[in-house]
Length: 273
Image (cartoon, rainbow, N blue to C red; front, side, top):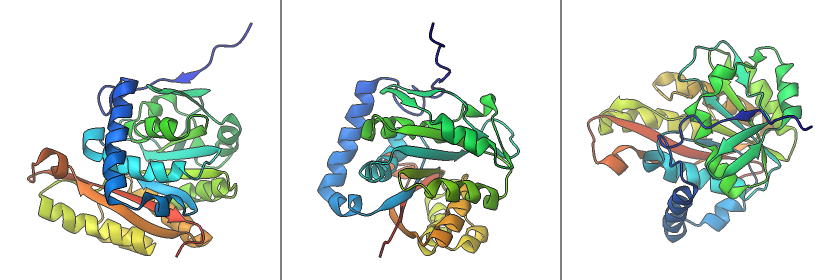
């Protein structure tokens, strides 16, 4: 008798993104038509990308940006992707590792790399708190990942109150394997005017572009700022170059410039220019 799979079920399908697989595929096809008409995607996909920063709002707002970076990451054909996002619903000290067997998406299941889960749980500050994994910041990345890499294994990390250096140590460990890639999930500023959002978000973008973690503390309001900082620490240590490839706000979709949320997509390149 086989043991039933312990599944990380979707928590926000039908809210942040469509619950219907065909609708998700239509959205991705639409995003890619725009990309292919306006961006040299072959050049970006040819880079040796080890990690990306991807937003986590509803697909109508940030799906274009998320799709762009996850398409680039998919072109690298990693064997596993570690998705790291901030906890929005549960107070958490440290980092929770999703200790399930598989991750549900409307496009099908993604296997969870249990060996990596066991390795991470041995690190100081890492634990498994199942209630922390009803989390949209990580979940919204998974349908894109399933689309581009149907057979890839994933690991879901949700962090709360933790030192960026602690999270960076896990990123360093994961990047030791050339077949592992990282997704850092974050949105930028929240509910400012468009003009003010752009001013504040420019600080975040400069910090990423220059790989300068100190700039993050000069006005960047990203909800996943800790994850960005951890990635910048690791990028600096490993000599990964950073490139911001998209920035937009919710006003691009809604037309409302009075209270916007900012989004960016960035890639971290090994041996980049």
